[in-house]
Length: 397
Image 1 (cartoon, one colour):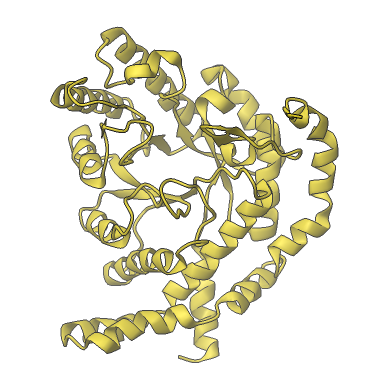
Image 2 (cartoon, helix red, strand yellow; image 1 turned 180 degrees about the horizontal axis):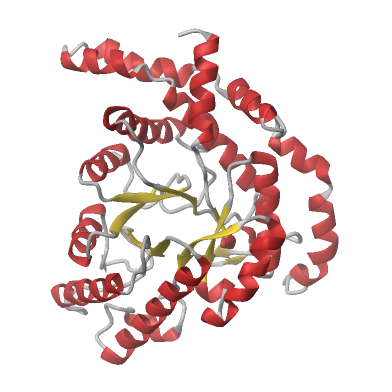
């Protein structure tokens, strides 16, 4: 495969790749031990839209911003006109809507899995309003992550909580408007350390099936045990036609929210390969939401998002360069070395010039990180936001 063929494949692949940014990824966040504040962090929903627009301006791949109901639209549906005005001003649309069922004190023992029926009812009310917010904003996906679980054996009725989850997701599915979807996320642990109600992809798949045809599984690349074969999970969910999308990040130990590919780029490549192999075999790609879920405490927030998006583009192109016809033939004949080399040869290609050429042909900077650094935007928001963001810094003598 020559350079011209590589270029054509890269262009086709990049033209269909859109990556949603998380509003919370631009705000000051932290660990359970505290926060390391950044002077330039976004403190309002407008600042989040403005920062996301900068990432889209230099990458051309991020037209939507995922919103968190409690943090971004605490007033519920009454705030929809304000969000719509921000969409118009910054050229970024609202993306997936994320309910919050883990922060309020009432959720100490769970939300829709809580033994208290009053708490379950309040959680359902919040979920229904989140569906309505999404409907009014024209957002397709409701992204559902639940912190529900327990910390000690015997303290919760595991089967009954499963039944409450199934009932709640079924009722929520009935409220979906045309084209809307539920994306059910899973996580093996944290904050629940004994059992988590939706702990793996199989649990999420069972609940999605029971909820209805418009419920799918969301795969967060950080929500797995060490060494788990994520691309196999992706392949199975594709085959079941229940893969809804991704939350992209990377991790060294657990759910670390590191920039995509910073620890294991070959794993991201293998996931992308499974997606593109499916599209090649089916004649069309699966309808998936590609979303970033990262909250950076040390890296500059906008720079980290630019870095993640460009890394995703480069790995996406590498996966597109796999010789799929040859791979299938090698697999059929069990030519193991040749089959594996179809992947390793594509992964070894330096895709950076291909992505840069695609960007320049569309009036985008060849080096988005450099373009952002030269824009003066970071200096400007640091000047405007610095006093506010750093006013709560605590120092010890």
